[in-house]
Image 1 (cartoon, rainbow, N blue to C red):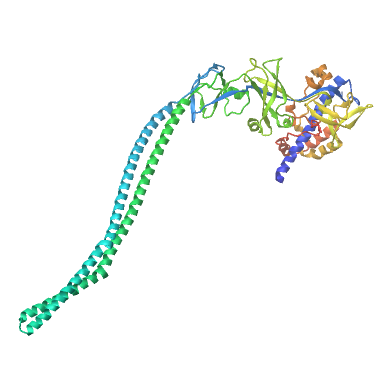
Image 2 (image 1 turned 180 degrees about the vertical axis):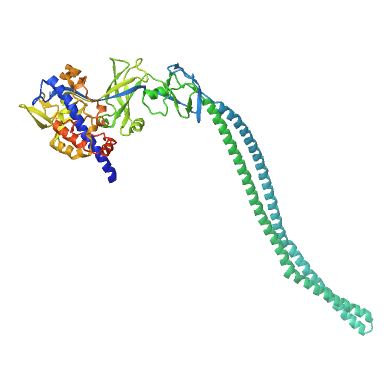
Length: 608
């Protein structure tokens, strides 16, 4: 926390502290008159006293609340956006399961449904077209793959055929041609040799000899050509044909890969288009189903037998936070998730009350409770605390951030046929009950030098005595030790000197003119105490006609300590604050005292 924030809060705390003391001082005057009524005079100069009482004492917390059904069904509007109520069953009607409770306007939904049906038909047509196209693409892709695979197979077979068939056959043919040419050359040379001999012996003519010579030359040329063809086949033709066939195989393999990839891409694209059309169709169908469901939800029927209670009535009766408290009726606009009807389904009831944060340490689930209902005077019901909300009530925090109360549910025993939803009630949560305890009024307890004490009258003089106290019920506080029954204690103990000096130290920052001290009531105004409260205050100690502030009207919902101020001290403080400038007074008016803590009385503590 920053220094500026701390400095801003300091005057507020001092204002609250002094305001608590001065308001208590005013109440002390009231108590003095009360004490004089049942005490017949004070110990010193008419000071009010009280005799410590020993008897039964009940410590409890009383809160106002509302009766609500324990088991109920909350029906809400489930139509999106805002819509209008066309029909509404009368509140308080007993309905059977299946009876129509609310009918909402569904005209726009019905028009939208017709348009949505057209969108569904278009989406279905697109999906059918995509499905057939997918089958065609898949079939064509398989056909292209098969064709490319076959071409690859043919190329591989052509290569193998050439290597293992054509080339060896051609090689043998070339070799056989060489062999034949060699034999022909040999025979031609032999014939030329004999022809030459015969020509020399004049058996052959010169022309015949030259013809044999020409045949020999021709045979030699044929041999040279055959040898050249073999070399050409081995060195050139074979390698060229082999490369061409191998290239054809490679081209066929790449073509097969291209066709396979293209077929896969086309198939995936067609499949993606089909899936998109199918998703679009399902989306449109889902919207159509949702609209049909919304049209059905425009009619709200009773899920069980019960009594109709409008949500607006229950919220106003139970002080629940709601953006609108306008009574529910036909023609009214309602929003989605807005609560419309509460349908109690059982005969058991609970009381919903708000417990102040200062009482959270006292209240816990399982404590017994006594409930009285305003509509049933003279009757009371019993119950137990069922649950306490973990967070403060949102409405109370919205209206007053300084006020933090917690929603508490109390199970009520009985009440069937008598209790009704929305009845106002008061719940007294019994914290503790002591059959035999010593107790005194809470204003009789103060703090002296930091210790809890009471001013006890002994021998006509009052003096402080340390006491140990327990719980209080905002009127009486239990004294654990330090007092005995019958001892007189001052109802308006004198202020501690340390407290008085502290008031004077902080008085310069406060404006006591803003603190209205009420005048002390007289006995003629009906200020008296009942005999029952005087004899056994434990459970029924109540002041009749007394201007005593209620617990919720005091600071933080609890009573502060009540040391008195003399007229001289009060006048001195007033004079100091009257000297403040108008700006200082206006600044102090805008400051509110911080609640939630007890002034220096010290009572109401838990037992050690």
